[in-house]
Amino acid sequence: MADSTKNTIKFYPVCNGDMTLITLADKTTILVDCNIRESAKGDDDENLFDVHEDLLKSLQKDADGIPFVDVFILTHGDWDHCRGFDKNFYQGNPKDYTSTDKKSNLIRVEAMWFSPMIAEEHTNTDEDAYQTEAERRLKLHRDKNSKKDDRGNRIRIIGYDGNSKYEDLDHLRSIPGDIVSRFNDKNQDTFSIFVHSPFKQHLTSATKDKNSTSIVFQARFKEKKEDATFSTLAMFGGDSDHYSWDTILKETKKSGKDKSESALNWDIFLSPHHCSWSFFNDRPQVDNKEPKKTSLEVLDYKRGASPKIIASCKKIVEAKPNPPHNAAKKQYVDKVGDANFLNTTVYEVKNDTPQPIVFEITTQGPIKPKVQEGTARAAGSAALGVVNSASKYGSGKV
Image (cartoon, rainbow, N blue to C red; front, top):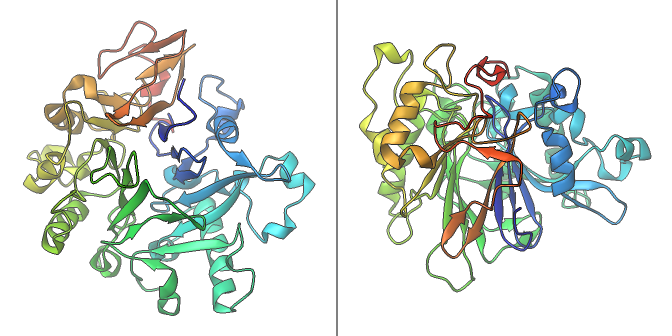
């Protein structure tokens, strides 16, 4: 079990999708993406991990018993990164939260992180809901409403504008190269986020897509405020592709912000786009077999003796459909070793149900708490007996 007095990072098993909960020692919570599948609530598959139930157990409640997450970061609007937002998170004036909403366990988002790219193209109802809620909050600022900075109304714009303009709200904006250390109106002395992307060229390119405009950031943990170095650095990149990382690498080097404690270093690296080959080169992989040197260089910024790569995806096999790509897994394993490549679907399984991968942040870096009794662990690709190689988790269903 994780130590509740320590900073933790929890990677939820959501098949081909992303959902990560950062919990700081002071109980501040930062949710990065969500993929809440209704089947996980028991509709038709009791073996899927109920991330919504676990999230409710992991979050704080206010004086009125309303569950809340301090910050919600949506890296981009693809459904496997925002699924379940509409049904499971409260939207609207926080003062209008009702007893019915409470009975439904709707989670209030105290502060949203919003990328202008989300406004460019809507492809699902959950993305629509996130956009609508963001616009409601932004309007409070445009109207100079006295409630604009209240809990449940807070918002931060990440990155530049594409075609939808928010120049009048620059006071809410963080751009690549910025370091954020204030979350839900509270300063943090031992935790911060370095914003890497999206860059303006990603948003205005004629060939832009949601993946290349994903919010990319480095989460930074210190043991003490006065520490000169970080105990843990974790990299999050949504579905960012090799074009994005090429820009991130070049711009970070050019800015000189990787001199002392590198903005590119990492102890934990969440593989972009669910272990897709798109991090390494264009797809299909069969026509683009060589990984880009820049992508391999990004991985070379790993730190310590056992840096971890997390593949938030279904069980990785040779067969299609992709992602995940087995060729991508091989590149990651070449960098960190098989035991340090952790696939959320098969790494820890209890009673046939994948469990979250949790790290405690310590002075020695990220460590894994002891596995609960009755839980089987599959380090790297060497699954223990409880993990069936022909499992439904390799079916490609999300």
